[in-house]
Length: 318
Picture 1 (cartoon, rainbow, N blue to C red):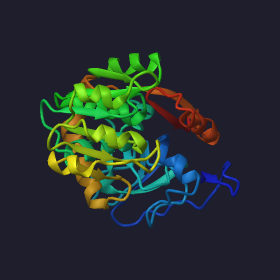
Picture 2: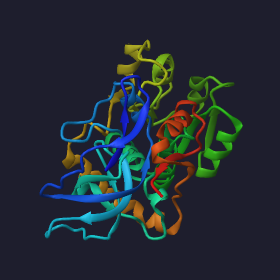
Picture 3: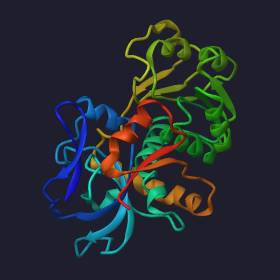
Picture 4: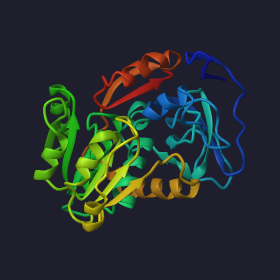
């Protein structure tokens, strides 16, 4: 088969690699579409290697057709599925543990389904499990127009939360409002901490961190949970520890990719139970910014690197 490999100079190439071999408890998927994530950009730079046992090439979520499965598997050849991966999605095939595979919600195509596993599993892990999201909570989500932001905003609204999010353009502001965001912060014109002080948050999903983290923590509601999943804005910030302790704020560092397969299986099972009806009804929508042929993955990476996307960018094989 073919996969997108990273060359020594960080360029990408579509070339032949060994076919995956299905192990006991795994299914083999013929990939039709793969979702892009910022973790892919980090991996391309050599900063985010895949967990042991997964392919070396990028790709954390796919949709496709089952080509082989065990006799005791839930899945059969020909099933239309999407899957969460530790890596290996930028390819023609991938072998995946049974429990990390989900049916494509009725009415969705492969492109839409490829936008689900990583973004919604990350949102569910951090908002619902780490953050303990409850009805009526106020949630702050950085980069609301990203693929992850698209998922997190809609998951929070599905749980009847108030959502505050950041954007960098009027087009992105309009986009996040269409997803249900209640308060939109234009980070070019407004101080994030100043706005958050007027809307104390219970949970924050932060992919930016950097210098803004300390001032923003001071605005949280007592007992708030600030969850950092990436440091796109930098790795350093000054914290007022006296205020931090006094209000009982919790600062959490979290990544989905490093979690055990058992934890990922649990998250996906919860997603299927809670969100699949919302996908089918259209209450939660998969917003696709662009589709790019898989051999042209570098073009898709450029879109993410430039933060051009409103929603997900998807690689396709058809």
